[in-house]
Image (cartoon, rainbow, N blue to C red; front, side, top):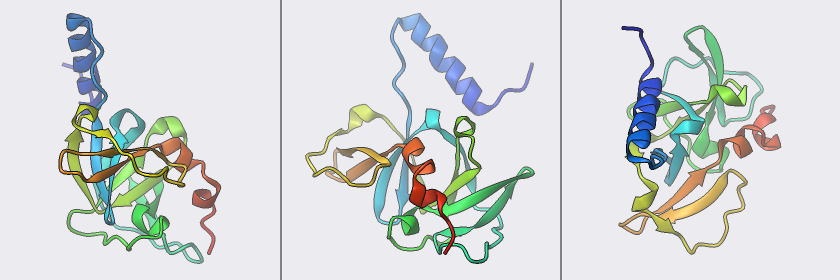
Length: 169
């Protein structure tokens, strides 16, 4: 049997289930905590989720650029997602994880998040009546059944944001 990644297997399985039922499969969302904020990442637009490897600091860079990580021979710039947005600095230990940018974006970037909260279905949320968030990478806001506010993450708007790309201190 040929080896295939877990993501390929899941996408293939969802496609087969969709074909069998004649319906489209709901998009899987990954719940993530960055500092005190809760986020929903679309799995189809996210890369791998990894424990935090050793980080090599980058001199003369913004404090939210935590360093560079070697992931299977590729270097990724690691940005502290919470600190970038003005929140608390994320410790690179314990439950912290790196969420790599999907290859389709053509950028070797990884977001350091406080912890990963597991898969979520958008059907379990309702649109929030909060004022619009001014951060361009927040595509929408949602409330869960416990009344907690979640932000839907738009990676393209972050990865190509001028402030995110300008890491010089």
